Amino acid sequence: MKLQSKLPNTGTSIFATMSALATKAGAINLGQGFPDFPMNATLVELVAKAMRDGFNQYAPMQGYLPFRETIAEKINLLYKHPVHPDLNITVTPGGTYAIYTALTTILQAGDEVIFFEPAYDSYLPNIIVNGAIPVAIPLEYPSYKINWEKVRAAKTEKTRAIILNSPHNPTGAVLTESDIEELRRFVYDTNIFIVSDEVYEHIILDGLPHLSILRYPDLFDRAFICFSVGKVFHCTGWKMGYCVAPETLTKEFRKVHQFNAFSCFTPAQVALASFFQDPENYNSLPVFMQEKRDFFQELMSETKFRALPTHGSYFQIYTYNKISKDSDTEFVKNLVASCGVAAIPVSAFYQSGKDDHVVRFCFAKKEETIREAVGRLKSV
Image (cartoon, rainbow, N blue to C red):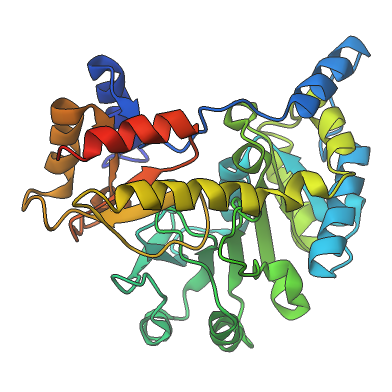
């Protein structure tokens, strides 16, 4: 039998490749974005209690109502934007799923979608599998800021959506008020939707505010805003997230969602409904991750790697220009073999494979893991 692939140019992701190499070599994996420390013990107990209390059957398609209510309270507390638990919030199996469902809701064959590279690796296949046309705009190296002149030049009558990601994976860049004003001008009086990937909303560093699209009612009116519980509460294996959107967009989003996942893991939703009631459980995260970022930077300053700025997420980009002229892909493979540390080549986040000789490290690790990994990197 013959199958015509919808993603003929897509192979195994660099994350799977590097994780396999790290496992085979017994290397420390600073490549894939997952913590190696325990999640919050209270949250563990809450989900266990939910299972013991019998919350083991299907949750409603849109999500367990008390969980959506606490999400709405959190949004109003953080962003001064009232949203309705029933009309605006849908619980999803992870942030990536929310992004995919938003794009599937929006796109028709031939539509164009603007996104920024380096880009989280799901955006491109999400666009292509929906029959749309990806329009990649490179961020400005080494600051990784958006060049809005290039964005305006890329807009056509077929532009249907723009994808934003702040805090940004893989670079840690964050949106500024200037970016928000440029975005306003860009979408004004158009039919362009915004898909805002905010899965690292609580991992923003250096005292900066998170400029969520939820802060701006005029932008929210055309937006799907996607979040991840797993990323911020150190439980990536839960695959738990949610999408916030205006009522009319939420209705269409749920039409797609109900025939895909339909429902998400009930015990986790019950647990999170309680956990979100204490704002300290998410407000403490920036300080927690800043300490890890600063600790990692301090140790890395003793290596030949040079840090590029990061203000959010749990990733840091480093240049290795003083070490090697190899491509970043060859460099990270050699790094695993020579010193037993895995990183991700940033060229993997570009369609073209653009190579600025930079690699991504994840610092969401235990102190002893970071210390051992950097100790090995000093030999490079």
